[in-house]
Image 1 (cartoon, rainbow, N blue to C red):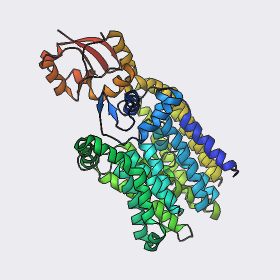
Image 2: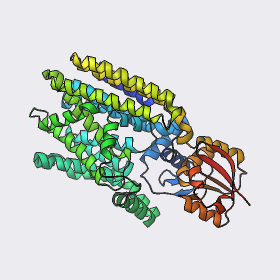
Image 3: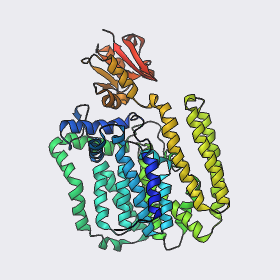
Image 4: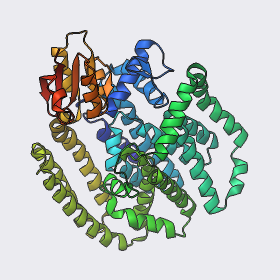
Length: 512
């Protein structure tokens, strides 16, 4: 049996703490997390784990991988917040550990440790590792596929590419194949195709990826094809689902998402691009990997913060390699730019946090906690980097993110829960519900109401839809955000009797 060294256990324990600490202590956040809990619950209740369903109907938003993982977790832990998030957290831990092992073989053990810790202790990886959404599962499968290619484990490359497709659709194949294609193009390594066992690989890929799609096409026909492939893959790429997403959307997302390592990001990328050392082919691969994910989603019309998560493993390796090389060759350049970046980062973040108190005074404890962590991390890291103790500075950054996890889950989330989750308003609704009347619910709140209240009904998307259903003489209950209800005409608003409210969410009874 292979024995793992101290580095392995450090990566495992640190990542497990960051991802699992108080994982189920706060409710599922609207609107996405309840979807990924309600869907597997309904699939289990129907005894059908192949056809995703929600609110009593089939739906074709995502392939079933994450639903299967949550269904399995619910069998162990019971259906709830922890089970809904556990697959993401588990795969985040596994991703960091596997990145450490792979980079240790490809570059060096120290680069492997740095890369894994940078990944685990980056803001977006932390955030999505604790979220009941599909992004971490996709990122893990793509990372495993691409690392397998780089290590010439080609059957694993095909296997994990197929699992990525079962997780989120054609995008898994696009990235797994596209990144390898552009790498071979840039490096002119087309001869590698002869070693990739392509016929056997395609067979393995189809064996794993195609059965669910063939089943869905056979059972659900054009409804599945038009909705899943047509709308969720083609239309969402060409037509924005959310307003205000400009071409530069992902620049600030990356700057914040790579915190606290952002100060070394640009110099790491430049060093990887210009190096002539033996690691150059692998580094070019990671650069192509990161660039393709970033550029593809920047071009896409629909943009979400979570979409660029698959580039973070590549960026973590580049930054980890850079720090490893700085220690290996005793360079002073990273010291001064890193110190300057840390100081600027600290000033901007602490200033931004206190500015946020103007509109969110209830976050005072969390802001003070975050600011304290940033201040101590910055001061300690500057001192250590100045003394050329890069390894200790990395340790301080990692410890800071562990403290961030504590502050976020213990101080920030309890203050935000009333505005970010429907659990409270669902509990209030159960007190007032007569058990038979129709519930009309705002689309944004529908998943949370379904999961926590166990009741769902016709949904409306905006104030015009709400006004229209009241004008039609509909009866029953309405659950909506107050700001939406207050936009409808007074003649229709007078038909609503307020029964209860929590934060901005209100329960109304429609006047008979």
